Length: 183
Image (cartoon, rainbow, N blue to C red; front, top):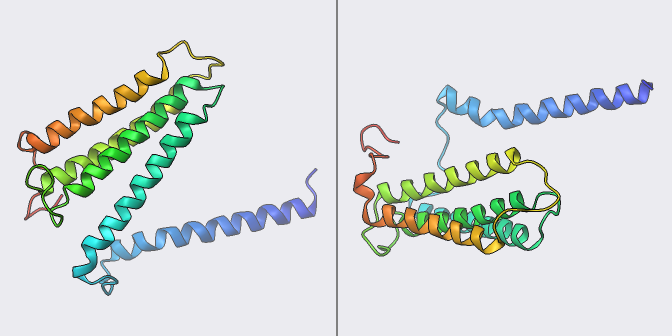
């Protein structure tokens, strides 16, 4: 059962895991030490890079929605639909975040840092909550829950409410960014 080849494999797997963990912690260590790194991207290219990165995030969230909505896990129907529709909300909120970025042309209302941060945080909150609910929901062979369209409508209603708050009532949200203190 515990042959030398098994021990050898476990040792090398542990070593590889340790090296990978150290490499992943390296950027954090550099940041904590306050080492000034050279700018990799000129300031005038930041908006283009931000747009590309956000579009990638929107596409990934839409793909999660498309796969989850059309390829249902028969053991977790309600959980799969909830997760899929939540990631549709994440995609739409990330799109609103992209469109309200201050360096972009105004989107419906004048863009502000408050708006873009609100939509970004809302997308992260919806994604995190959906993953937690997905894990917490029990395994069920069939769904006694609402039909698929209800999940989709709920997702779109959530985005509509958050868009209403973020676009027309961003001033009623506590400040998310201060010029002096940052986030």
